[in-house]
Image 1: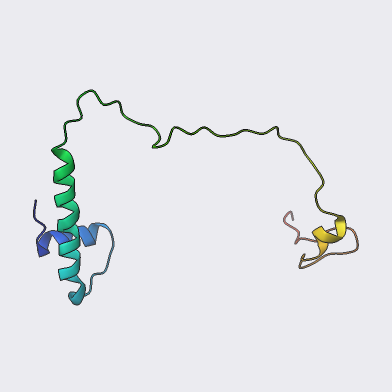
Image 2: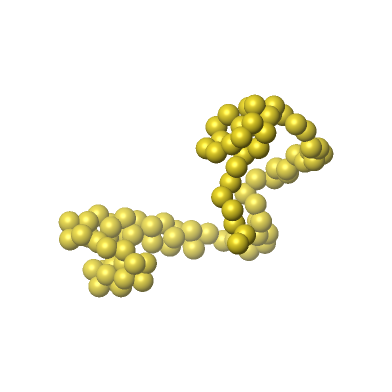
Length: 95
């Protein structure tokens, strides 16, 4: 499949992209390369190949969810924009 300037303009409109006149040739070449590659992929026989849900066979290493105090009060309050000696102060959200 070949991409012409009219198709490029239509794709750009649908994708809400603004293409400058000097960029058209490079984009046409790039899109043509992608479509050529896709045509090559379509020629591959995939009969009997199971679809993958993930590329890698790795599994997540779960850890037990434990609460822990890792910061002291002073460390937690250090960068707070508004605070008193004990709490971080936030704007009132309920009227």
